[in-house]
Image (cartoon, rainbow, N blue to C red; front, side, top):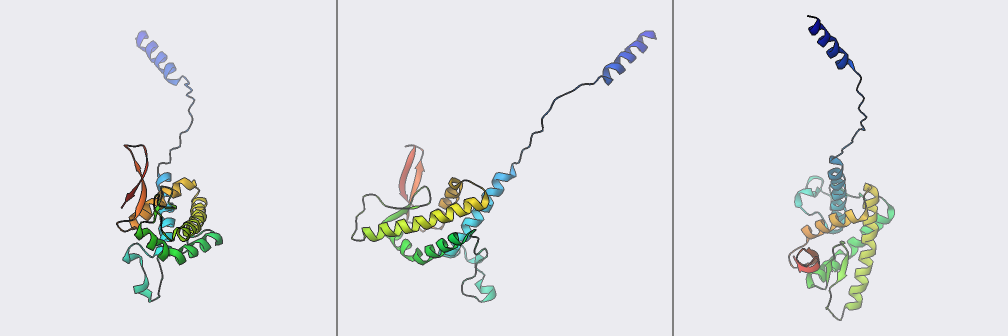
Length: 189
């Protein structure tokens, strides 16, 4: 009996002994990256809708209200500069589309326009001026979207490139990553 009592006392003392484990809390926020991406994607979609019109007919609210051009998420521009850049892009969207259809310009991997290599036309100077003006405005918008969502500009390039690729008709040129060569190559959509 004494032996059992001794085992119980030792067990109780051992069980009540203070064990200190030094832990540091670990915070994991898995949804943050997806949430940031969604916000950037919505901002990009809104901007591209303002420039080229909605990508899908169900987003256009005209049939409900009867206004000429009302979109679901208009004017997500964070600054007056970005709003001016969107307006400028909208004013030249038809001209950009025309040269894209002709294959004179394409969209590079940073979602900027680029004159296609090895193409010369009588309109080279006009195309170069168009590309420069469009890229200036695109960069203002991209930086605004990045700043408004707290992400690096490189993240907006990826989202914008994807959105532009999805909107583009077949035959437009895009600079795509090619795993085999480990670099970027121009491909028709």
